[in-house]
Image (cartoon, rainbow, N blue to C red):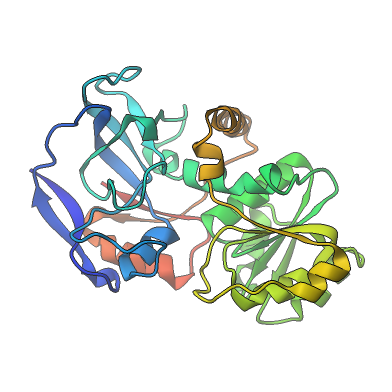
Length: 328
């Protein structure tokens, strides 16, 4: 028996139930891992509360990013051995499997060797954030001299985007609600910080960029605020929307888009992870970036598994700068 988290109803963090369960043996094409660390993501909080793309089929497991060691191999699984340090990456439907627990059975296709020289806590915070944040390059073609505007910049994906922008020679502009996080964001590589609750965002971005505007905007929020983001953009810029944290419909910002010939597109990491050639290329870039120090996971806070509900509360408080991790 081992401790796992199961969801019997949607709601606040208190609905996360830690219980004893027999995880069992992996089936064909699956692995069982001994979980050491779990990386939390806002999509999991949305799934828990009933606000995700699809509703949980209850009771439901939860979580799809973790680090640990291989415990057992299912039929047909090759390339791994018992005891190997590994990462679980989000290439399955949320709720189809789950890594919130002491043990987890996951598809072998969703498992990678853990990057060398990283602790389990760091390894649990790599793939979701960097595969997502590489959208500024894969979709936005961010390059030397570009200004990249990054809303929700203190999130793990926001910090990953800051790191990647710096790596390719672009100039990241961090967008956050209040200036209380400004120094922390600058310490993590933001060249500029804009506090949306304290200024006219478009005017401030235009000031920073000497009137040019940001050529790439990488936004997890969506909703009506895209009008403001569009007004802060450069001619020919691209607005990439990779989330829906606002919970509101996202309008098309017609006049800014028309007058500045802007492009708008959606982004999810499956654009990379579900295409073998793209995935192999970006995976090697991420590993190279980690080895060279261009990329470094930032851990905001860790919680023990018994405090999984508190970890979700902290995740949703927006206090963090970096990744929230649960240790097992």
